[in-house]
Image (cartoon, rainbow, N blue to C red; front, side):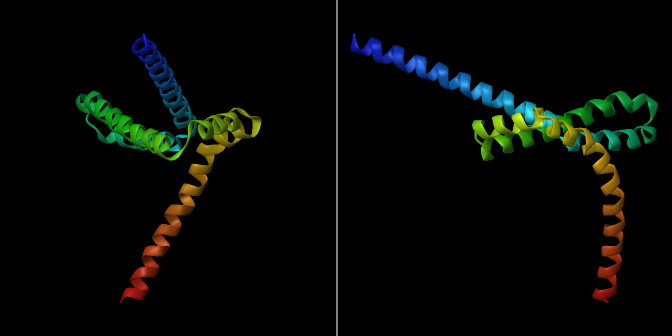
Length: 135
């Protein structure tokens, strides 16, 4: 009888733990989906590359590109799962669901575009500077 009670308790704990783990994974997926600025950047890259891809190869290109995006998203999710607790992820979601969190995510693409041009310019100047001091 004790074995039966212990076994049932173990199964209940295991099921509860698995449910928590799945809920954690689901919440992480949601945070990544909300915050993944890289997705926006990669969409821009894809848009710029498409005209260079032959029309008869575009479908294969898009399929392979999507696979790479999925690989990157999985890596980001893995990072969140390893570096944050479920409670921290819930707090992130609470923030992103708030008015200021929604404003931050709504402006993320514009920020990337505005800062991107400056970053490119700074990168070019940094290269020029390095060439000047390396000679």
